[in-house]
Image (cartoon, rainbow, N blue to C red):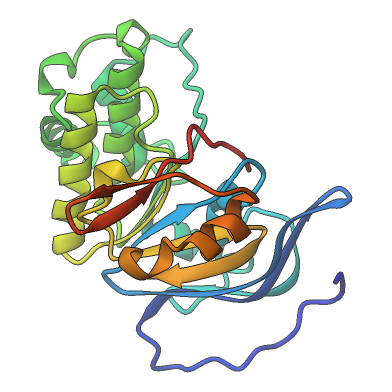
Length: 272
């Protein structure tokens, strides 16, 4: 379904933070997203799940305006991120699935967090109270005690929490998180999940990609099941049906009942 990008009518009064209309994204000869239409309202906490190669990471990159869009329309805060990316991304905090900080540079944990305040300019770290803001968010993720330790000396889980802090430090309106619980132990996972709930309660919109919804099952407001196409989206209690899970993963998926919730056990799933 390649072709020129079509003009889509949109409402100027929409309260949706993210709007995707018939979105097709292609890497080489392979489509990563096929005809995805999805809206994410303000204050939503949307968890995106799907198998390897389902397009989960690509969905986030499309919202950022960096995935190869071949058809459809994307609006974020009412703007096209492909044409007005600078205006859009300054309101977004992003934690990619795989992040590599150059560890040959002697950065401390607090320095990495302050990078989240730099934008496109290499501003002095002391400007506008950057260090104080970084220390505050490091405290929120439970890492204040390692703020001045070299980043390269931190454990994998600590590094992940530093990267989450970097996404939070600018107080963004939209948080995009790709497998944020990877490398985290049980305690750190709870700290991060509770923090995301806190930010969502403060009015932040969250879109989270994960293979394991357990840490946020009580916090997420909606789930999107994705396998290149959007299979289903809605409240977790209504989405995790046998039919939807088979359509998403291609096989019957075991589930476990935890209180009022039915949680699919899909294993460690990654993919772009």
